[in-house]
Amino acid sequence: MKLITFAVPCYNSASYMRHCIDTLLEGGAEADIEIILVNDGSKDNTGEIADEYARNYPDIIRVIHQENGGHGEGVNQGIRNAKGMYYKVVDSDDWVDVPAMKQVLRQLSILSQGDKPLDLMLCNYVYEHVEDNTHFTMQYKNVLPENQVFTWNDVGHFKISQYILMHSVVYRTQLLRDCGLELPKHTFYVDNIFVYQPLPYVASIYYMNVDLYRYFIGRADQSVNEKVMLTRIDQQLRVTKIILDCQDLHEVEKKYPKLAKYMFRYVSMMMAISSILLMLDGSKEALQAKKELWNYVKELDPSLHRKLRYWSLNAPLRLPGPPGRKLCISAYRLARKVYKFS
Image (cartoon, rainbow, N blue to C red; front, side, top):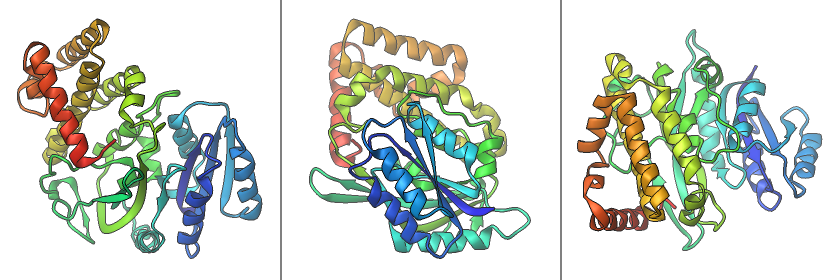
């Protein structure tokens, strides 16, 4: 068994995928790694580049060519075919910090030796903003114990801007399979499901305060660009409903109350983003979809609905009429400017 599998979903990635792959190869030079390149029906020469790497590194790199199924199906293929004890997704336009990766792999190797291997490794990630060449690091030293194995009962309080994202996590591969993770095809924003659904299955965690993942953001065609998101509201809503359905937070609270609190905040964030996007659209159909989304929550879990409405990020959304929507949109744009999350 390999120590870790890096899955790199690729779609029309020819112009930037080499940098991503090269950092993985350099960082894993001293470790037992594999890299799975998933060519998701690309129309450029992504597939040829992937095959070239596989020929040059046959003991490390494997290529899967598939009909276009979207980012989620690329992640699924990686999970199905991974030979590594651990699993990390690296998007083809992102990359890893090589010294940090070497540190993480050495520690993972140590933690993999026990009778109960670690379930989840967490590290920092860095927003690399292409528009103004600035950087912002998301770290967790204020909320997670450093350099020790711990459980959800040992975590502190996450700030309003702090979330565990796909960029932060290295999951144990079998845990992802055991929790039944299967991301929907042809759907953007599935990284939210990937990082959220497995959390209650995690019994052991280790946090390294190193900046492992470099997240490239600001390209006009990126899925988190606001204009792009407005064309994909239906997919944002689909993912939000899957998040709502996949875990019973009342059951999570019985075992891990601190985790349940964090997961509630994550649900709140997903509901806020969906609601704001529908407000930004502003059409009669979009406002009706917003109403239907909240009714969906109410029918699913009335107590969760009340909590989301009155005690979360979504409380301001109760402000009535066009003035209320205008105020919410202004607050969203201010937050986007400050935190540069799109």
